[in-house]
Image (cartoon, rainbow, N blue to C red; front, side, top):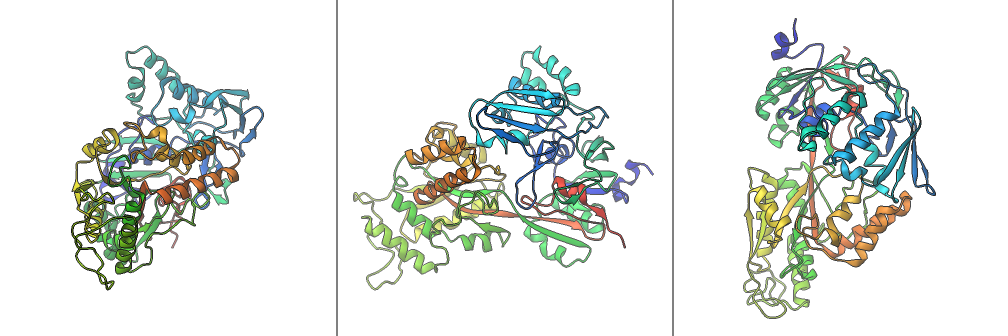
Amino acid sequence: MTLTACHEGGRPDALNIGLAEEPRTTNIWLASDANSRKVLSLIYQPLYMNDPETLGLVPWLAQSMPVYDPNALTYTVTLRSLKWSDGTPFTAADVVFTGWLIQTFKVPRYASKWSFIARVDTPTPHTVVFHLKKPMAAFLSSTLATPIVQEREWAAIAKHAQTTENPLATLLNHRLQHPIGTGPFTLAQWRQGAFLHLKKNPHFFADGKVINGMRLGPFVDDLIYSVFGTSDVAILALKKGSIDMFWWPIQPGYMDDLESRQDIRLFTNEKSALYFIGFNLRKPPFDDLVLRQAVAYMIDKDFIVSRILQGQGTKMFSVVPAENRFWCCTTLPRYGDGMSHDARVRTAYGLLSDAGYTWDVPPVDAAGNLQAATGIRMPDGRPMARFTILTPPADYDPHRATSGLMIQEWLRELGMPAYARPMAFASMLQQVKRNHDFDAFILGYGRLRLDPDYVRNLFHSSSAKSGGWNMSGYHNPEFDRLADRSRSEMDPEKRRELVIQMQMLIARDLPYIPLYKPSVVEAVRADRFEGWVPMLEGIGNIWSLCTVKPVTN
């Protein structure tokens, strides 16, 4: 039976995975969308992977952990003896070429990871020596996580691109029918709008080996990605057995039905994410720390998680997710956490009253009872001006839009003239990130890097410019000093202490109030395959696709 003939019912001898959308490209340098990465992450591989439990580095294309020479500012990496999917040897020259290509073309998403590399030497075909321009702590988690491409395949592509008017665009738009990689699978066929067929790479270096305590395969010869237009259709296919996994978060509306079935198993994992409310510290009213603290007390994160996210999420107190255990500070203030609603109002009112805020009718009367507040005035006696909380529209993200409405209502209980306003996402970014024309906003980062250097980018004063990541306009010389030191501190324990101090300052000064991060709930056919590996971001990972096996009755 041909692949096309049996596709509608799923391949009984293959692992069938449903995708929510069509992958956009097979070009690794253009692949910024999640669905392209779900395919290409099984073809192109980095030197090191992350341990699914600890998130620490695991040698992958590398044979052992990198060796650092602080005097020479070098990292030496020894490579495994392995082959590309076309059977040719993988060597240090491929690593050097990959870095050259990224630096020469300034490839987006990767150029910053290689900008501090002075040169790369290859003393032997299986030894790579990275020379750093200056100490850069993120080297381990960023540069070494770069997917390596084959010089033999890409050299001609790069040479041609350099002769064109726009070399980067030519490189990114090059189409590859059968990309050559070192991963567990290769691309056999892509019928756009329908499916992709990946076949087991006969030259995959880890097949049959024990790496990181796991015996790896892959244990299936064929991997079929089917594209579905809606979750309804994909869930129906899962229930019928046409697919073995739907590689997309399951929405709460499907939970009860899927949980009741013995032939389907749900996995819940956390995301490396941050959803937050941010403030414009450049102007009133949110240039006042006391006001931001009062807002923090009024926000009921338990309500947001239980009612708005329907339990499929976790409240946050740091800008570093708690699952990123090495870097996350767990001793930060938890404004209002565990307090009753009335206690929140009384505490927030006390803060504002002590700071000189007044009301025509305060939110708490002389007997300590709550009442409808009106006429709030700033400490200088001026009425508080109406302010807006910008959110994405509900059809883009109902969680953020609804959270904005709830925060609006909570702040109005203090008499604040708060108004949540949904705005088209692109327009919202223009207002917040480019124009800095806003009062407050609710945004999120759905896929944070594990390395905490992003904390520096979000809050360093040098990033408080138009288009910069410091959208709140936070300026704190103490934070800047800690952030600059953390970037160049090569000792992980010393760097961890710096990052913890940075989190403490953010939790104290509140340019952002972390709200929540959604969970990742994924569904698989329990009667077809077993051996999925849970980790941060879900079971759709390299470890799972190298260990899942058909269920044996």
